[in-house]
Image (tube, rainbow, N blue to C red):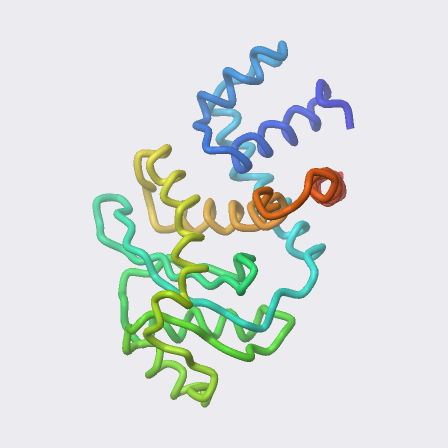
Length: 224
């Protein structure tokens, strides 16, 4: 797809915005350097309209994740209100699911777990969490307490570290404006992050090039 065509411009703008910690105005500036004149408001509309569609296509192309899940929740200030972002990743750093909620209780934990059990193609073998009692209560209701590995901070570093890209985007956007927009952005961001998260510091240069080519192929198929 020609990046100077209308569809190519949309694809490139959406990729820049979700792939890197850029604002809409940053993306506008980068496109302008390529001779593509489009307003940041148009770019915002493109990300809202096409981002979730691309994310769904990328998720369908992903291989099955690991059955070893790590769950955690982080505080977010959204529209001036304290909210909680509940997230799950596997032991390789793949983002499995996330949900923005107002509470940090058993019902909130249940909602995340039910989404995971319904949407993931594998059954969990272990579920590692922090010491929050709500996880144990929710797992009791689902008859999954035997899978629980609670209160082991070191073992849950995988999900703790995976919060960092979200914190960067939160600062870049000067915090999220609403619960709905945060859920939409973070769900889309997770799918694109999974595709391009290569962990380059752990692999050789030839392997890095191969992984990058595979990510580019997946992206091209999702936006075709």
